[in-house]
Length: 112
Ligand SMILES: Nc1ncnc2c1ncn2[C@@H]1O[C@H](COP(=O)(O)OP(=O)(O)OP(=O)(O)O)[C@@H](O)[C@H]1O
Ligand SMILES: [Mg+2]
Image (cartoon, rainbow, N blue to C red; front, side, top):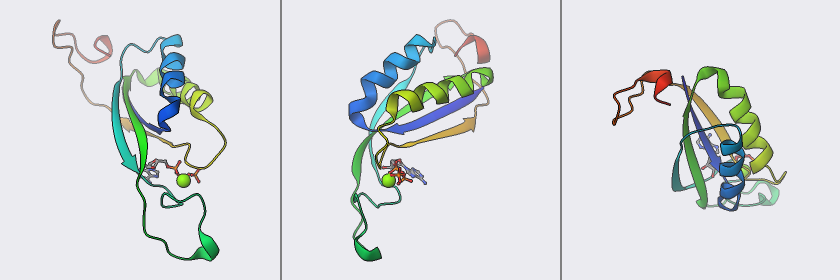
């Protein structure tokens, strides 16, 4: 299993949620976060001058999935979240060791 963590622009949340539902994703966690990337929260760096860092509001999605679904989840997020402009976000994929569905006691691939 994999844990896909995607940082996206907040106004793209509905599109991404819809795209993930369409490919059969059964659950996700959404968190309001703040962050910065290479532009340090600015849309450009003036002549390479150092600016103070500004944190911009972003949405973080955490999605636990079967390993075989990882590429289709990444593709769906990219398609739905991309604007082509800076700050579109990032996708992090990590190995997921163990999942338990509390109500049923099901585990791992049966629980995601
Ligand atoms: N290396 C990183 N580690 C953790 N979070 C990051 C990292 N880079 C970006 N993020 C998160 O993703 C958000 C969006 O990053 P962003 O899309 O601006 O990345 P970028 O590398 O600057 O790419 P771009 O040039 O397209 O803007 C950031 O606000 C931050 O929350
Ligand atoms: Mg950036």
